Image (tube, rainbow, N blue to C red; front, top):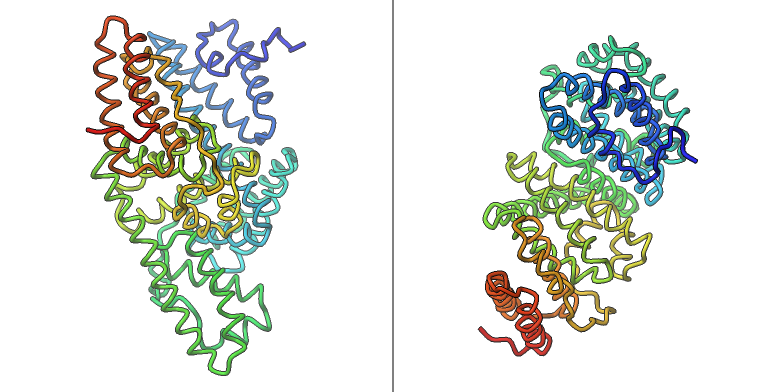
Length: 480
């Protein structure tokens, strides 16, 4: 039995589409709190509080609007989007904590915190990060109340030491105690102080590295990250992590040699070459996106992902590749430095979704191998995969042709999704199809769609002409 006769299947969007009167506003508001808490049991108390606060603002604004339904639906869409982004970020971090461990999370949060408070000293950054990592450990265990208490305590520390951290946090410190953590977490990164020394082109410390690394390993790694992020603000945090990973490997190798300085110098050149290579990959992807547009860019990735993860449902592959296209849309209009940073960090979240899906469903060995790699290496690994060699393709029997109402829909998004489903099914049945044959097949399906959607009996047209085309593609005897 649910309180207030609340149906467990009632969507949250319904609560956000209600137009409550003054008398039932409180009733609807509490139903919303209950429903969002029940639907998202792992959501933090502070996140739910923020969501309900936003909901209250929507009610205040829209209940006074002329068209309440339109107002609420528009504002609810944006509110739900922000809420889901917060939850996805939480899931992404918890997955990485579980997969890569506390040390990697510490390094990642150290980079993020130093990027946000670039003028703070290493000791202050280190203190904040230790608390942040502990908070994430509690988040991932579901200890929501302890998280609330720890976040408030951290915000108190930040406000007490705002002169040493950042002048930008002062407005957050004027807010009510429970609102401070979210305010601090969403602050923009500080501008670099002119009092700081100018960035250096050096990546590695070559002269005293081995002595410091041997005697104070953890402190040295943190000091290295501090200097790296301060000297190279243009680098993505994922590249910073990969540099740290490769640097540790280099130190283990070079510090055993007599001429360790020259060994480390060679390693620096390799790292610079590696960074250039990553930048080129992002640049080429963005150029391709700008040239062909979001829909066809997504389709290119749909072809690729249908080959390398054919075990995933077509709907999942469309969802993943849609995220890739949104990354390009978000990042490719930025300048070259921010473009790389934005693309890597957002693409890694898509890769994280792939690896998380694999952990639940055990797709195939090559995805397993890639997901066991380090942060940025797993992106490179998946990017370089070919068709899954262990996969036995099924016959080509596209279900899309059984639903002409979707292929002939007046809604363009419905049509595009149907065509993408058809494309993915074709690739799954013929993962090694030559590009020329695929191009001819796509054109043939386009002509089929045009002819049959104009036919009086659409289903009969798709059943007869469509089946003939399917047989031609299955046999490989399709011609222009």
